[in-house]
Length: 113
Length: 114
Image (cartoon, rainbow over all chains, first blue to last red; front, side, top):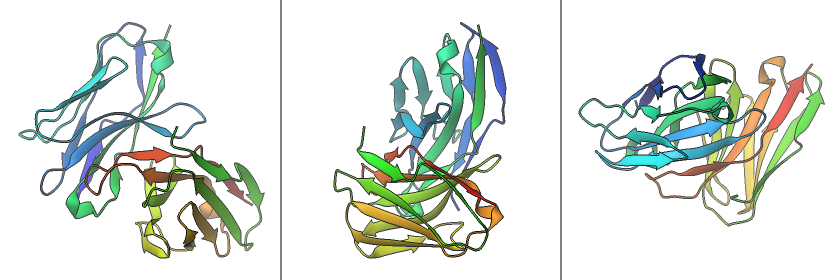
């Protein structure tokens, strides 16, 4: 079945550091890929998405590129801020998952001032 | 803001009692979902609905039932609450299509079963 694997946290970085959170997936067909973010005490929010191979999703300085050849969708940001501290979830949706989203287990990110 | 509210936001109950959580949306989306979030498990799908009176099970449906009598409301019931059902429960709607499943989440309900 479909699945998502993302790097385990927690990840701790200093402000202005470069961020990468790895995400790989297994799916039949051509899934849509998502990154969601959850700030403390809140629900998940869609951060960015990509719906076909080589698409790049971007939002709030974050980027992720849909790489079908490596089945990856790594999240990157060039210069993180304290306000980026949150839990990040990689996710996919495909025709075989019947309108359901498959989430990774989440990566907690903490940014030091 | 996808107009999703959950009630109650916090609840403490005792083992063996029934509990109902409510999710309300204002934008007539067809698909609605209930998830639970636990440390180390991410989000796990409990049940989902693809229309009024149309529901299906997710990966952790045992001990839970759902109902959807109106498009805007999706109820999650714990038949007889157990301590293992202590969790944070999130409702979501699908604002995209079947494959481009862009979900928007409610603020969550923190449930404690003593």
